[in-house]
Image (cartoon, rainbow, N blue to C red):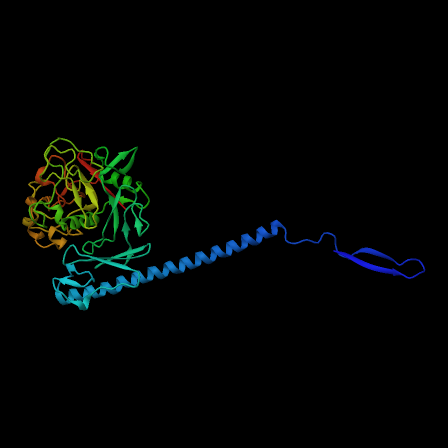
Length: 415
C-alpha cells in the first residue's frame, strides 16, 4: 500500500506543495491462500465429513439390527409361552398380531419397536417363523433358530437378496433351517455352469459327487440342496391350499408335475408361472408343474420331470420293509421300519395335520429303500417324467450310490 506525505515550504515564493509517495517497508510478494491450499483444505473437510457420515451410518445400522433382533427375541419367547399353555403355536393372528386360533388370547399379542413391521407365519401347529423389518433391515427367526438376516427376492434392497434365477425360502424350525435361496428351476447346463433358467431341459446324467462340486461353483456360497432344505420346501408347499386339487390342505392331491410319460422326455420350463402345464400333453390334472410357497414365490418341477440329488447319504438304517430289495415301493404310512435317517423324512414330521396318513394317492410319492443295505446310498428326490404315482414332493429313492449317474437324475442348487 502507498504512503503519502505533504511538505510545506515557507519563503517569499508562492507556497508550493509536494506530495510524495513512499512505499511501506513490506515484502512485495505478500498474498492470500493459493488455489492448491484451498483445495487441500476442502479435501480434508470432505474426508472428515465422510468419516462422520460413515460412523453415524454404522452406529445407526447397528441400532436398527439390535432393535429388530430384540423384537424377534421378545416375540419368540411369548410364542413359546403360548405353546406351553395351549400345546400349539398360533395358527391364525388378527390385524394386531394377537392369536385367534387355536385359542384367542390377547395376553400373547406380538409387538415390535417403533417403525418396525413384524410378520408371523405358521405352516404347522408345531412350528413358526417370524420376520421383523425396519427400513432396509430384515431379520427372521423360527422356533428352533436365532435371528438371522432374512432372505428376499432378487434385486431387493431389504434383507439378503437371492441371485438371479433363485427364490427365497422361509426357514423351518422343524428342520433347523434359516431362510435360504434355491433355484427356481432345475439346474441347466449353460457352458458348464449350473444355471437356474426356464429355457432348456434339466442337466441330467450327473452323479451326486459331481453335482456337489458343480453346485459349489454356481455362485458364491452356493451348494447342492441339502436334505433339510428339500424337506423345508416340501413342508412349506404342502401347507399351501392352492397346491392341492381340492383347494384345501390334504384335500385331493398335491400337484406332481410331469410324470405321465407324455411326452416321453424331460421338459423345459416356462418363464410365465401361470403356464404351470407348459409342455404337458395332459392338462388340468396332477401334471401341473408349479408349486407356490407361503411367501408367494413359485418353484418349478419339485415333484416330477427329473429326479434330483440332495446331499443326503446313508450307509444303513434305511426306512422300509424288512427284507425288501429296492422293490416294491412302500407307502410312507405303511412302512414298518423307520430307520434313523436325519432329518426324519416321514411326512408326519412336517407337523401338518393329517400328513401321517398321506400316501401316493395324495401326490406326495412313496419310498424306495432297502433296510439291510450296508453300502453308501445317496438320496434322490422328486421323480422322472415316466414314473407316474411314484413321483412326488416327498418321493425318496435310495437305490443309487453317490458315484452313479442315472440318465433321469439332475440337481438343484441352494445358497
